[in-house]
Length: 519
Ligand code: C2E
Ligand code: CA
Ligand code: CA
Image 1: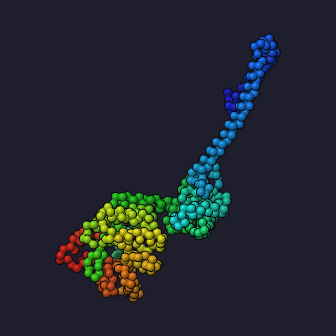
Image 2 (image 1 turned 90 degrees about the vertical axis):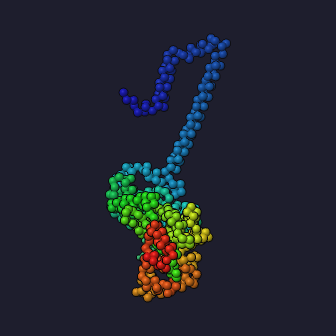
Image 3 (image 1 turned 60 degrees about the horizontal axis):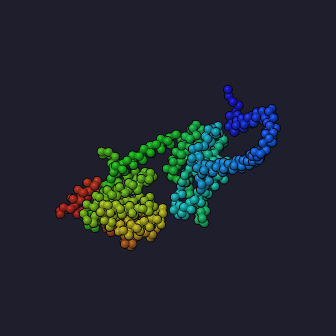
C-alpha cells in the first residue's frame, strides 16, 4: 500500500508516531487514574523524597525542551549559512568574477530545452586588438576594458543573455522574431564594441570579429547551434578583422580543411620537412659570394616542394611561426657554420616575432648551440613588423644589435613608411625590393627611385642589396650606380644545403670564375 505523500516525510511521520503514542499513554493514564495513584504513592512514601525527584525531572524536562529549541534554531542558522555558501560557490563556478557575466560552464549547464520553443540568434564575439591594449595599458587597463565590454553588451541587449567564455571571447543569446535582422544587429554590436574606451585615463580602441548562428534553423540542437556561431566567428576572424559573418554550411568544410592543413604543417615542422634553401648574395664590386639568404621550403614529397608563400602566413596564423623559425634557424646555422669564414647568413624574421620579447634570447641560444658567430648573422625584417609595435620592436632590435647581429630592412620601398623607419632604427642594410629592379628598364621613375634609395643608403652609411636581379643589363645598371650587393636568379636560385656546399666548393677552387658563376 502506498503511504500518503506527507507521511513519507520523515519528520512528519515521526511527529505523528510520537503524537499517537502520547495520546494512547494519556488515555491509558486517565483510565487507570495514573496521576492519583502516583500522588497516593508519593504521600505514602513521603520519607523517600520522591516528590523532589519528580520536581527535578519536570525541571530537567522543561530545560531540555528550551535547550532543544535553542539548538534547533542554531541548526537552522547553520543550514541557512551553508546554503548561502553553497549558492556563493555555485555562483562563482558559473560566473566570471571580473565582468560578473555567466561563464562557459554556465552556458554548458544552461537548460537549453527549457527555451526550445523560442527562436534565437547566437552571437560569438572575439575582440580584435585586445592584446595590444593589455600590452599598452597593462592588465588593469585590460580588465577595465573587459568590464566595459560586458556593461555595453548588457545595456544594449538587456533582455539577451551575455556570457564571457574566457579571455576576450563573449557570447550573446538573444530571442528573435521573424522581423529581426540578425546581420544588422551584429553590426550594431560591432559598432558598439568598436567605440573608444576610457581605460584609466587613456583612450583605447578595439575591434571585434562576430559570427552568428540561428537556432533552430542552423541546428535544432542548441549546443550545436552555438558551435555553428563559433565556426562563423572563426571565419570572421580569418577574413580579416572587424567583420560580422552569419553561419553557412560550407564554412564547416573550410574550417575542417584548414584544421587539416594546420595539422599537416605542424607535422612537417616537427619532422623537419621544412628546410632552409639558400640563395647567394653577391658582392657587386668583386663578384664574390658574400653570403646566402635562407629561404624556407616545405619538402612535401619527392619533387614536391611547397614555397613559403603557401605556408608562412598559415604558420603565423596557427601560432606555429616561432617554432618553425627556431628550427629553421638552427638548421641554417648548422649548415652555415661549415661555410668559409666570414660568409654571412641572412635569415627572414616574421613580423609577429618582433612582439615576442623572448626572441633575442631564443636566437642567442641557437647561436650558442650551433657555434655560429653572431656577427655573421643578418636578420631580415619587413617594415610592417615595425609599424605594428614600434617600442617593443625597437627594444628587440636593439638587443639583437648589441649582441653583434646585423639587421636588414627587407622589401624596401613596398611599405608606406619606409623612410620614417629609417629615421627611427639603426639598420645595417637596406634591401631594395624586386619590383624596382625588375621594372626600371621600362619605367624611368623606378630607375630614379633606385638611385634615390642608393643615395639614401650612402648618406646614412647603410649598405644596400638589390633583390631580383635576372638580367645582365640590370646588373650593369646597379653596379654603375654603386649598389653594394645583389641577389637574383642571374646569380643563382635558392638551392638546398647540399647544393650550396657544392657551389661553395666550386668557388673555393683556385681557378674560380670571379663569383658570378653561382648561377
Ligand atoms: P623575400 O625575403 O623577399 O625573399 C626573396 C624572394 O624572392 C624569395 O622567394 C626568392 O626565391 C625570390 N627571388 C630571389 N631572386 C629572384 C629573382 O631573380 N626573380 C624572382 N622572380 N624571384 C626571386 P621565396 O623563397 O618564395 O620567399 C618568399 C618570401 O617568403 C620571402 O620574401 C620571405 O618574405 C618569406 N620567407 C621565406 N623564408 C622565410 C622564413 O624562413 N621565415 C619567414 N618569416 N619568412 C620567409
Ligand atoms: Ca628576405
Ligand atoms: Ca625581399
